[in-house]
Image 1 (tube, rainbow, N blue to C red):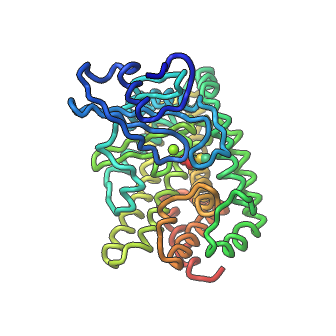
Image 2 (cartoon, helix red, strand yellow):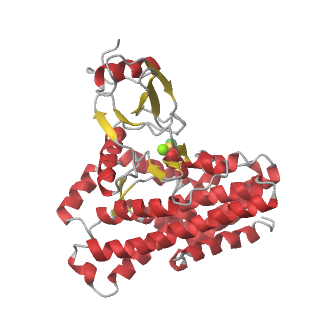
Length: 411
Ligand code: SR1
Ligand code: MG
């Protein structure tokens, strides 16, 4: 058996079994352990260790020195500390909405956490056209509690600055700065564009100087607005879900940034599910029903966030100026503006950039994929350019509907 106490190495399945036996106080003496590496994300290794005898299981998540998606990305393994610590904090702020972390190991850069195998990854479930009516209520509580309750509106300012320091995350932020805010806006060699979408990208994104300028402004806002402790990568692959439960996972991109980042990211990923459903569900009635469900979900996420944010502000704000007439409205307005902008950025970058989403890449019919990508690009562009006037759930839906019309026209 290897020694886990001396120096870091990347584990294989047998190591994870040995690690679980010797370093984690979770399984019984008579446990019969098996392990499978189940990670399907872009960065880390995820080992599911099961005690077949006593029917208990645990997840061990380890950060490797490079990203799985490409070893071009050399990443600090400290991201596992960030993930463990923020999950602990989110567990207090939004109980029930994140997995429980049992322990963090700074030598092996891994943490042991609750196994959520009775849930499904939300992206996978949406691609199977499953519905989760409680999701908007769950996720809006998670968003308000993690975003407002980590901001200067509520947290004592020196304490908040200590949190900013604790969650400085330069390498993972650099990935976002590059992949979300920079590379999609020019002909970057690292982009991966579906050949059928290339003309539309050139003409409507790269050749639009105003849009490119807005992306630069947004990039600097992302880098310089330490507003709330973000999840930082809140797409539907970072959510485990079942009918009555929502668990947000994978917060390794966490840092203090603009609150709208998480909300916009999520909304864009619900739109990817919409684009997928529109072009893959053959039966018209089933398709309309599912698209209607997604539209309602998007609307409800935005509107419930707004309602709960207003209520939480009234109940929990400690900052003196929070009570000034009009300040809450101004503050929420800027979050919704940033939400729209980030929804736009995420829509563009998953079509143009390196990191793709299955919602689009699994659309087999070439013409259908082009249409789906055009909807995302057209909506993305509108979200960015018109971000100041997109405020309600209905406004978000209106952008999607207009983009559907644009997608019918040529490049
Ligand atoms: C190199 S990492 C690529 C993407 O995967 C993560 O989930 C983030 O979304 C990142 O942008
Ligand atoms: Mg992830």
